Image (cartoon, rainbow, N blue to C red):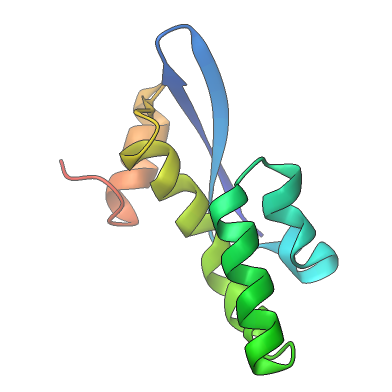
Length: 96
């Protein structure tokens, strides 16, 4: 099960995830669409077409990490609390 981390950017709070993506297992390429992650939605659609759906297995394991890293690196979110900071450091997503 994925671990939830709290992120903030100014006064905006959101959740990031670390670990296996159960939502991607059950809903596949719809997950980035639900989360508004258009870039990875298109990448997953193309990968699914090219690999006849086998790429979905890979995304079950990596999509939560990709999504959370994009929030941190591209959208400027930072950990909202010390527990989230520790989890992100342990997973190697941010530096101490």
